[in-house]
Image (tube, rainbow, N blue to C red; front, side):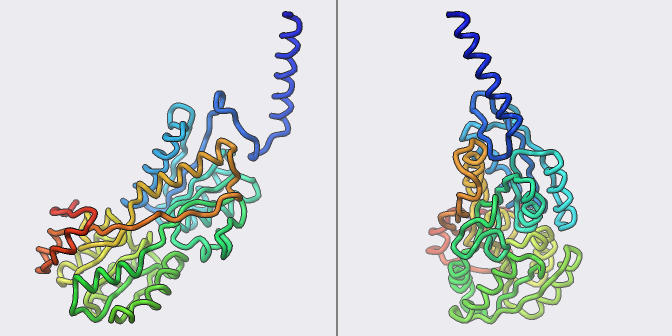
Length: 337
């Protein structure tokens, strides 16, 4: 009996050894023995993307993949620089991580370009338009071992909300980065819809964070309000935009919760922690071998909600309709630093 058991054990060891020798990123790790290494590439340092990262790790943890337990995380930030984003992804490929989490469109594009030949799956989040970013086909299917979640803006809801808050406004301004596919896509949607709500759209393109301040100064002479996108470069300099807009007594509308907390008047915005969790659960499926990234179409967050900062309204002398504030998911009566 002991000899039989020994033979079985030896056979299992030989089988595992052979599998390891022939393995690839497609191999499934058993949950009992699995330890995973992932690389997180975040394009810029700001609240919404930080929340994505927090939610992503929480989503993994809910699926039993916990940092410091069976998960090692390599985190790097590109400081809103495309070249740095590519270098980060290249380093993750060299480290042979099990998966790359790419936060924001430029990081997702860089990660997929670097990882595709290594067959390392890329799971992205905070990518507004995966199709325009060439990460998915028109029907939502991945172009390779890359998938994730989209933070597509609820543009119609945003325009409707702005019209209710500013019934006399005629022009809306948007600052955007000309090289960010997500921003270009959002601008196109705004251009299609602003007329339905009685607005004229004025846009100002930038190529770097250093240009945002001057762009804001110019735009503020031409518009009644500004609405912000999920543009990573512009969001990185949002404090500058808000300072200049407040001096001119012109309201700025945000695109997510954190922007409202720091001084935007309101947003039909997204909960980026929830978006990150959704992404983490997708990544867990891939890490556990339950699905390949190429099998999973990208996902959208289910719905946006209204967030309002009453302190900003008070500072700008804007009276808010109680029906509107009562319908908000959350209101804030202070401005965060």
